[in-house]
Amino acid sequence: MKKLLVLFIIPFIFLAGCNHTEEQSVEKENAENGIASNENTESNKVENKKNEYLEKLNAIEKGLSEFDEVYKNGTQTDMNQAKAETFKRWDDALNEIYSVLQKQLSASEMEKLREEQREWIKHRNKIATEESSEFKGGTLEPFQFADTQARVTKERCYELVEIYMK
Image 1 (spheres, rainbow, N blue to C red):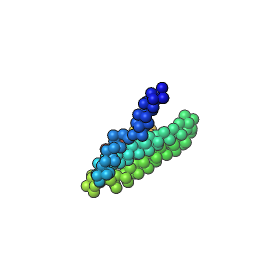
Image 2 (cartoon, rainbow, N blue to C red):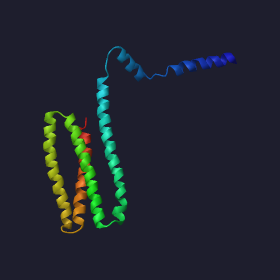
Image 3 (spheres, rainbow, N blue to C red):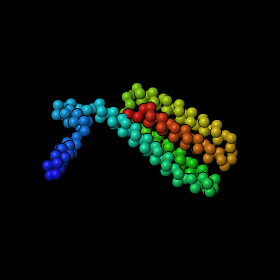
Image 4 (tube, rainbow, N blue to C red):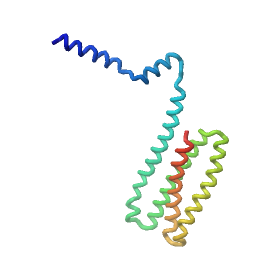
């Protein structure tokens, strides 16, 4: 019985001690041979940065639930202020993403994006004006304007991260 136990325990202990994955072995071998895994590292950095910003954007979305009660029971002034704050949060995120892209993109890519961004701002404001014009002069006009700006800016944040983030 003891021999049988020893026969089963020794291989188990041996296997437990060799708990390296194939990937770890390849990384160790590459390190020993002076081969850097820059390609994987660079790819991981890109994915990590994208994921980091997607998580930030999702956190903004979740955080905006704090205004749910205002939209249900608040005054029009409170709702307008909440919507303006919503737009501000998305605009701040957009500016942060843009700042990161300035460091990541080449000069020619950045110039192209800069021009695209200028056109996008005009487009965003035009849409916001059109959608809010239905309430021209009323208390809902600033709410609708900020709502449209927030929605379009949110979409742009996700777009920039997905397309340009490195």
